[in-house]
Each structure stands twice: as structure tokens, then as C-alpha cells.
Length: 381
Image (cartoon, rainbow, N blue to C red):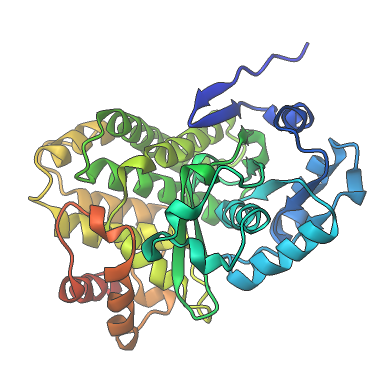
């Protein structure tokens, strides 16, 4: 007998448990999608996960699909997927993959129902208020445990001019999130570690944001505790179902707490992710940058570092930045940005873009261009 999956209703409707993907056909009906576009990437296709999803649907292999989502979604890819959406007569999207596929799907859903260019809806350019509830419905099916984009209100897109900019609106939150930890069982160790540290960073950074939002802080702390407890087990044993369940929950909780804002880690990782010739992974960037930002913010967060230490099971006064650095090393993540191909020559442009990033305003300690340059140098190692 199949155990029923009871929905979590928080920001959106969430079906969360092993085997939850079987709920997809019913949820398509519930949100009124009759002809969906499948948005995914080549890795998900090669792993057979896209095929598993297609097999659940009446359309099967005849379902319109876009399988070329880049590692960092681009404006060009959004427009290509939008063309497939329109040619297929689609009325909604099923996004299957990591944060890139889900973010790209949100951008397509926006342009499918709103006039003008994608840049018209960028938050830092005043576009958030233009995003209406008319956004096409999206059902998100994450295959990694990192970004939490399945419950997030934002999408990060690298535009043709090289800027990585955010689309942010509650209207971009997927109508349904189907979180099935079984879909992450085959995730390689390095990707498990990188996406897991993405979730950890989201929880820590949103907890440290100076905005007053105690419910979001409670969610962020619970997510950080889960990530700290389970990330190494999930990385060492990809088949550990409890570890996979808890890491997917930590990922989702980090995005639930996004309402409180992020900070300088993301202010730095966004322009780094826009360097197309490097193709840097967002979660890996966050993990590598986090120690430098923790040191920078020390002394500017009240008692929050003490609360974080208790949550992470660390002794009083233990250096949080050192703890994250050692955890990164145990997970075999890069030791610094230099090891990822970043050089000093890139820093002036990176700092210029970081100051303008929408996450900079919610860092607990103010960050200007000079401070960002020092942070990038510190993260270079």
C-alpha cells in the first residue's frame, strides 16, 4: 500500500517525501495545466530523471520540452525556451532539475504572459512591481538539494550584456513544489557537497540579515542545523535516504527564509557566476566565499554568532569562519576562488557589480566597493 503524501502549505503547496513525484499528474490538473512545457538540463536527461517524469504523464515523449538549460541560466536560453513554449501551445511549465532549470522556467513563465523584455522586470531596475499574478503556472521538481528555488520568489538570469540580475516577486513562486528526495539519490558526491553548502549558506546568511523576521530566522536555524548534521553523510553515502530527505528539507527551508534577505556572500557570487568563460557553480562559490564574509560581519550581528554556534553544535567562541573552511575541506570543495580560476585582475569589475546587487542591502554590515574589493581578495586566498 502506498503511503499518502500530505501537503505542506507554506508560501506555496509542497508535496514532500520519498516518492512524491508520483503526485505530478494530479497536481498538473489541480493548477489547470493541460499542456506543459518540460524545462530541464542535459544532466537530468542523461540521469534518466526526465524520462521518469515524462513516463508519469499522458503526453509522454510527445510533451514539448527544453533540455538545454545552462549551468547559469542565460537570457538567450530563456528566449529559446519561450519559443518552444509558444510553438507547443503550452499553458504552464514543469521544471525538473536544479536551481538553474527552475529559475529559467520562472523567467519563461513571466515572458509568456507579460509584454516587453526580460530586463524590464529586473528587481534592481524597478521591475518587481510590474510582475503580476498572470505569470504562467510552474510546477517545480528539484533534483538537487541546494537552491530551494522550488519555493523561492526569485530567479537569477545572466543577461546578454554580462550582468547577472534578479527577477523577484511573490508571483514567481511555483504553484506547486514536488520535493522527492529519491530524485537526488544518484547525485555525485561533489555536486551533493556543493549544493548542500548552497543550502547551508542560504540558511546562515538569511539568519544574519538585519531585517526583523523571527519566523524566517527560526526556519533558517532549523535548516542550518539539518544541513550541518546531514551534509557529510549525504556526500559520503549518496544512497542514505534519511540524509537525502534532510538535505532536501534544509534546501527548501533556506529558500523559505529568503523573505528576510541574503547578504554579501550572494552579492559576490552573483557577478562571479556571470563570468561565462569560467562557468562557476553557484553553490560552490557560496561555500568558498562564506568564511571571508563571516569574518567581515563578525561583531555586527549582536548575539547571532553565539546562536549559530549552538545550532551547529560548536563550543562557545569557536571561529565560525574556520569551521566552514574545515567543512569545505572535508567535502573536497575548492579552498579559495583562485583555485576556481578567479584572478586579481577581475576584482575591480566584480566589486562594481557586487555593490549594485540586490542582496548587498541586507548584509548586516554595510559593504561599499572598497570593502567588496577586500572581500574578494580575502576569498582569493
